[in-house]
Image (cartoon, rainbow, N blue to C red):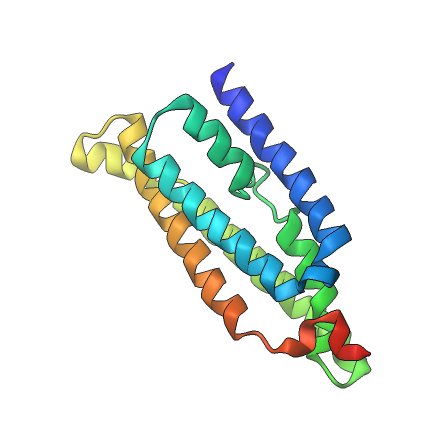
Length: 165
């Protein structure tokens, strides 16, 4: 039951953050929203790493853009796909850009599936229990959030809707 509540919080997060992205990303700035989401992702990973406090985990699951589906269907996807047309000058190459974007996402998702076996390796190698063996993946998740944050800082302002006007 407790795990179900945490997983439900992540699903609610996905809906709420996607709605926020849909209604406000263009007004607030796409890059800014992605930077905030990445920071929340990183913070959430750290919270899951450092604590087993149930309420902290629920809050962290709600704010942290943790996706339990194994695919990217959240707020990042909706903003990034809206930004892609502004990244290419030749409209004939847009399909290629979308294909590369989806291919990269599929490769990263596959890497995540591969990494899902690490807790078992940690448990066997270091004689860790189930919780101890999962925690390093949250450090990795947090680090990926920081990497995404850095990438979003470097993205051109051309991806903003106001740039087109």
